[in-house]
Image (cartoon, rainbow, N blue to C red; front, side):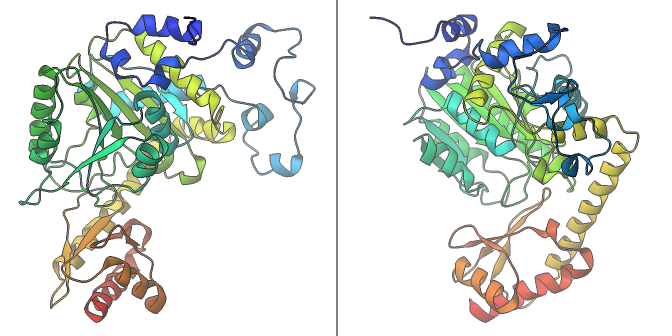
Length: 434
């Protein structure tokens, strides 16, 4: 029988042979590769074609991309190449290197460990979709908490056909439910594969693990890996760095997962979207970490990742990448980020003060929160959609009904001086309609 797999994919699989990375790949992940076609040849020409370059599908004048001044004039600090040219499939090399340096700087626990060079994707959502293509087959189990971002269902269940296994995010004491995750993991036998998604700070609750909770989680995952289960641990770090509460972890779980066990592959999804307050730039990254993986094996995963990107979005925004790269070299960057985080921390403390002062028969329970953009109410009675509609139609106030009993509030989007009035409307509406 003639193999239908491209020889380039077979070569990459051979490089990954003997690692859990290969075993964790989906059937699509095993088939994928980065072709040596137009993009690869154009990249080589970009380095060596010093006389003429007729490889890229771009129109040029005087060796610069042809462009409209009505567009260029709005970006005076970028040259035409930095605005209008295609960027490489995996992202501008300098930006990828800068992001890897930042990952190590923000996560001291990674010191001495090896990780892949981050691959640029068009936002964290795109990164999740790429990860799903690479590691999830129809019928695979994906473990998630009950309180989660609704896009996970679209990406993993509806798009890929995975079976979602959920566990309660919080235990009876109001902390992270390690035991609940452990109960779900006990269903997996030696040699079986489980994809586990972690999102801290959590959307919709705004909760991040405490240090002691992280320790218990690591014990559980290590025990599961040692029992022979292969784990693909997906880290949605979209809100990384936005930590406010005392005792919360300040590093990504990726720092601990990256070399946890030979049966574990950690997949970190993060980006500038929230970390650098550039929501519309759509710049995210996907980075791999696994005990025992060598540079050539990381590169094999990167090549497969590039193949998925080439087959979907092809590449990401060039001006957005260059604007970020210039910001990272600015002497004002760190100071501006520090000021922005201080302001968000102040909003968090103000919300805490307001919620601590909530009195009377308000049928709302405040779920634990200590980070990110959100907090979440659990309704003691009534229906969250009914409350959402009342707030919207009667008070002109937008919130999100996550399900029948949970209302998500993105307090990060409310000005400090309006916070009291904003939450006052929620309290009054809850008493009125529930």
